[in-house]
Length: 208
Image (tube, rainbow, N blue to C red; front, side):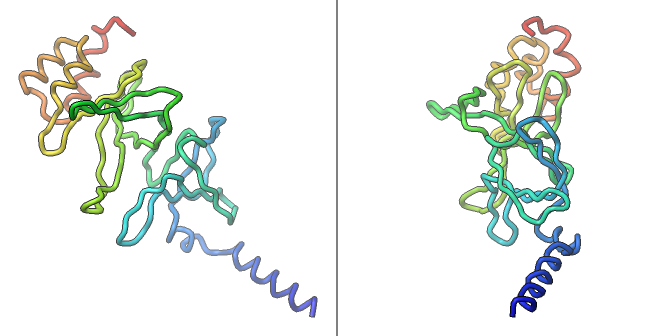
């Protein structure tokens, strides 16, 4: 009895070990994580549910290459991850609100969240803070800018209302050209503000 049982278990083990790649791709996509030591580990990543009910995982699923068992990672356990040519970064971010005004602060004591990196330069980064709308069950996001060296991010738009001009003027106060372009409504899109800052503001800013 022992030998047949042992052979049966070995067959099951080998079957799992040689699952075809296309079967893995059904649930996971090729990607990587950046561990707490800053090392990039290649593997298979899943960060949201599949099917009609969308859910963004608070702990992503990761299977290293040549490994069967998966692990789960929260934003506090890794520095970031990549999937489908997109990079997500672990950020210590908190949203504060007062009188319907929202501000976003960075501090190492805050709980960490995953933000999707849309554009990055040495001076300004554009992020999406993704979430699932509770009413529509659709994926949505909060667009955020972060200036190098600042402990604050700024929300760039407010839905169909367009650019949050007052907040952007406060955030980029030390670049008069950008402030004027925002106030005179010469800039209407997120990328226009981002590119204007990189092209016209950096050389004039003295605080960095």
